[in-house]
Amino acid sequence: MEKTIIIANWKMNPCTFLDAQALISEILFGTKDTKTVNVVFCPPFVYLQGLIKKYPKAVFGAQDCFWEQQGAFTGEVSPQMLKAMGCAYVILGHSERAKYLGETEDMVQKKVAAALVAGLEVILCVGEKEETPKDMPGLLVVYEPEWAISTEGKGAADTKLVASRVAAMRRTLKTSPILYGGSVTSSNIASLIKETGVQGALVGSASLDACEFFNLVKNAAA
Ligand code: 13P
Image 1 (cartoon, rainbow, N blue to C red):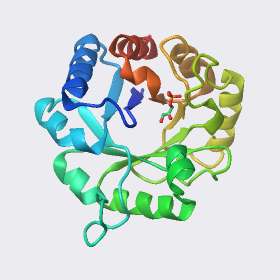
Image 2: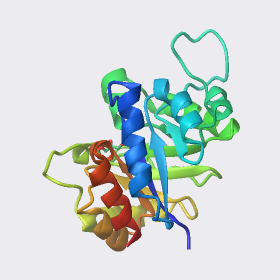
Image 3: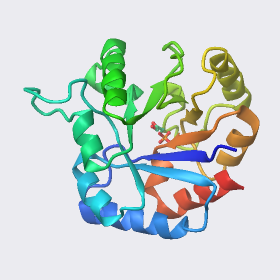
Image 4: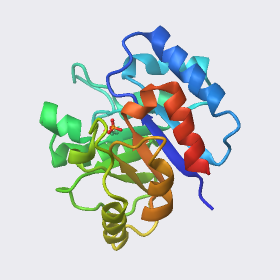
């Protein structure tokens, strides 16, 4: 059986490298005996190199990348750079990038192609509006409805809804893993895994609290 995959999307947190180090140390300690779950850490770009060096056994991903590998693209980071640094994954198409930065579907598709060429595994976020992508080696798809993100206590999407969306996506996607994202916590992860057919989760807020996150990982394994 494929291992469950839990991805920690730290977004633009925490504010210092020291805090990032403290968070990952505590999580790694708390999850050291959980062997049936693959955990991927996606910190901000600026912490990646330091964390990869310090925690060589942990698995890392970036939160975005550009669609070219090199050149005059001020402020951008290429998939090749991420791969060379030791990143295994990259999150692409997150709804916050469309909402705050105007990222389009066309940009996302170019990024996906470039990331796969560079040898990164792509964690592609798909909301209610985007079409289900086709299977590609190295692709993981996350069903992440925008309205379910960071609901602060109102909870994740209903498991019946997630199950029906996953079943619909499975008509197109035969082999790529499908994950769920949006207000996943240590309390709802077990039912999401058991009742919806997802292979894991993309976790935002709950990945910033070490105790909450390692309980989430443990409950994903249960
Ligand atoms: P929350 O877990 O905070 O809802 O964030 C979900 C998300 O956007 C993960 O990428």
